Image (cartoon, rainbow, N blue to C red; front, top):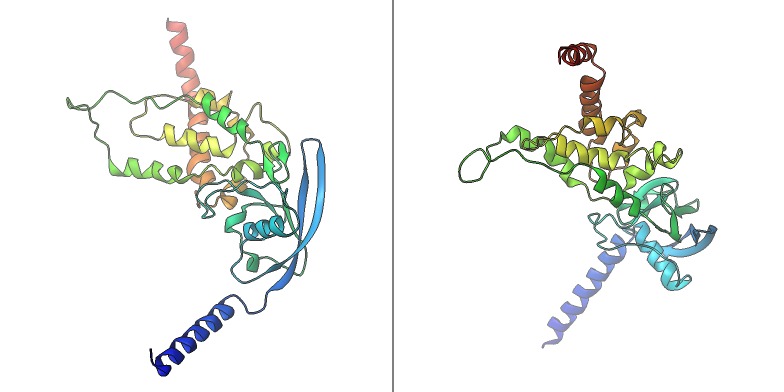
Length: 276
């Protein structure tokens, strides 16, 4: 290798390093984090300081704190790509995915608070017990398709009907919408309200072009849809951008009202009972 080629490679490497430094914001700066430490018996915010640089997300900072000064800090995560829903927490009081919350979107002149979701019981540090959600899902009447449309066992559906429920299938079950919902978060109505995540799941079933089950009675009674006052906070925190309130909950409320509170339908039902 000639001296000129060798020098060119060195200079190229230096330029690449300079670009890397520039993209990383140059010299790293310090940031302070207040992280909740504790378990089901209680806990408190502990203060940590670590170096941060351009492009880092909150989960990066938490891992760095684990490495440097809190090796026993518990945090749940998996994909670090905003698709598994594992790293849900509350950053500065707002339910967020830690892996999708960039530090350059936060005010680092003030301490950044990182806490576990408040709507579910704490297990340890930033990890909460979300098993209640899986039990709720079991209570919802399952998909029950109509008989096949043709002899080969297949169905025929309009594309518009298929498209209507596709949005709901994007849910990653991070449970941020459950956490932000005041019915669960502030009023602890876990026994009588299934929350926005499972109202969305129910909407996907109710609006499915093949499903034959009427779940309006379940929604009205067992699932507590009346508790939702459509503040749209669940829509605001959804990392997948699902329009939970307008496209799922409000249409379900309309179905419940039509079926159980429409005075004309009530008269028809009364007439039928008397004629039997």
